[in-house]
Image 1 (cartoon, rainbow, N blue to C red):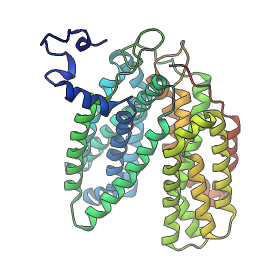
Image 2: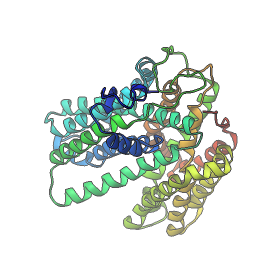
Image 3: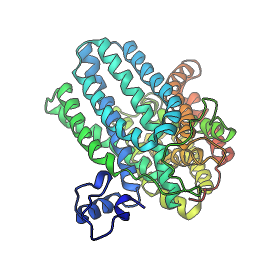
Image 4: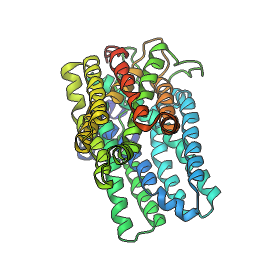
Length: 419
């Protein structure tokens, strides 16, 4: 019960907290917006994805602005990923001390500032520092926003993570279309990033107070409230590590679809550049559709069954994409792969963050799991490229098919905990 609830109806004492000075109608409208916490949690994913995607789609312009080589861009990418991984390891203890919601409120403000800074600075070293800082805050946000969504799932006793990840996928489309339009009209990268940062900053300031603090658990404490500080050794359970390895494979496969599918179709199947590019669109489009309906499918069939079936569909789709000689059929195969993989990562995130009463905080568990997924993002493209030089791209991509089958058949998702 809040302070406002404890105040008698006939008094005029203002309510404590963010509702101070607001009218009952205003508070009811805010309650209607926040609802059960799903929409604010989903909005965090959208803003985080939009921030990162806006930087990524203008990276070519930033490379030209600072006269950077491919090697320089690769090094900056490594700095981004290493900073993200390092901060993921520290986010668990921080959230255990201050709570998840305060961390998100700060990161939603800091990320747009760093995005603008990456577009404003004129020196390559300053640019690298800004991007490294952006990676650190993005890695923190990535772990905490998934932990936040999982606590919403616990409170509702229903899945929400697929919808959250769908919002992230949609943000990529929004960012790419916006960048294409602005670049076509001659808007500079500096103006674009500063304007995008201003919009994201305003959205973050509005969203922060709407984030739901969670519902009381069986111990009578809020899932997002400050908890004991876990040690650096905690969270590396066998379940988390097993799911983490599955997540690494999934992120490698996603990197293959986004970075190598068009190259494979053009070089190995003779597809035109235009047709080859549609493989990425087919994959991401099908993945977004799958995530939009993923929560309902989880409710109907259960997470373990959906994970296993979707993994087999993904493996079948990749097999179809690689073995068919027809480029159009290969594009369809990548679409099937995207549909199959769409729910796998959200379900793995949800399973990794469930833990048990003896486990550390949700944020710590998620930070450990995300370490594996980011490692897949960081190492995947390089490993694929090196292997393709030795064994050919076809055989390198074919090696992912049994890995997907193994993820589908061997991963064990725990049952959903009670709220």
